[in-house]
Figure 1 (cartoon, chains in turn brown, blue):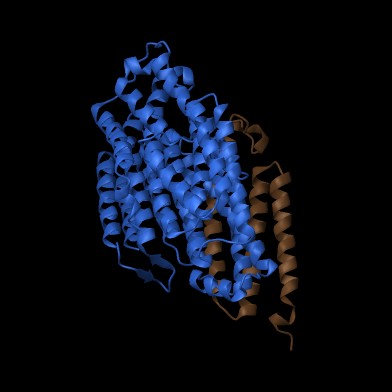
Figure 2 (figure 1 turned 180 degrees about the vertical axis):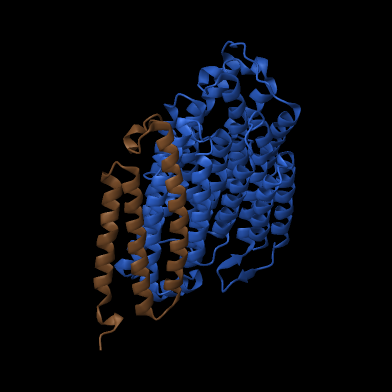
Length: 105
Length: 458
């Protein structure tokens, strides 16, 4: 019988790390605020998957409970993020993050 | 726990007052509510309590730092009536979100579980993204909020990945159980645990604005409305540094091994880079941003040099830093109102036109620079002493060199105010605001003269 734990945990670890890295690279190279938001979502969802996998392997429900908390927080974060993107679009008529150069370091 | 509940109720009450269109009630209700929740917090003193399966642990450390946070928020809200006096739009949303952010900050000081740490950080951060963009018409505020949001949620992802890896290797989120796991490892940690630890440090370092994760701070501080910048520079920084301190004290009983060097190097670079870059800033607000970066480096000393004494030193440091910074931001609000900018030339001759304000800013700057007998000096003295007891001689030398460099830029506004010719603009200040500024200045001097009242507390 094939169960969840018949796949070694390392596979999950590598898979989630690769997903997470794709998200990180997306945030770093993309210039469009919406695509960056999507990349951040990818990062968070890879973590959710990893937590669920760890939780199944440890026989401990805490990890899966945490996934629900993360989902709620991520939803709130995206709601705020989209509101901010709309705000930016109203003033600059663009959501390219390169137009934001009024504050310099 | 009573603190978090009372603050949340206060936040909901403020929003409710907004619906009832009672704008003039907002600030009195908030100030009263903060005093009440500060009282409720102090009542938990010396009563060790745990709530919800050790999700929240209320001990003396958390009570002391929660009190510092609420007190800082109280001082900031006292500046609000002046800052927002000409604003026509309803303010209940801004104030309500500020109080929810404060509740998140209190969660970060009293967590006993990594889930609660994450929820506290996100409650604080999501509220701050809104606050940073609360001046909707200003493009600088929009830009600040987008930068803060994108970087903040990006780095929250790292923090979360760190928590997931720590969970994967130790099998629990609970700080006490992680501590048991750490002692069972006996110094030989699996790579997954170490990777998780470093990612967690990165996530927290971003919130505190520690080099090399500080680059957002000057931009975001400059674009954010000044009153809320004061909130970011004090409440957020205190909460995040306490969260880091709490994580290391509860799981490792201090720090050692590979990450001690990491935090050592971060602290040294934060102090040097923050102070050196601060010298070249053209205006007061950016200078205060770099000043806050360098101060987070000093606070990191308490994390590196963990001992029962360093809790006290950190308490004194956060309190004196918060009061001095809020006082400086109080004057900055006035200057930006009168001149429309905050270049150092705008401060010219302020000592003649506004002697009291000039005096308050001088005391705040001297305290931040660490000149005796003010609060900042005593705080630095105790912090450096604890670090020396741990044998961190080189770190203390770096910190003292950093303080010496910082004098160069803290004296810029003082020299402009006292030595330059006046530009004839007089700041318009009402009496209550003056009294408040004077109260903060007196507090700085008083803490400097009587530090032993605070230093033996924890």
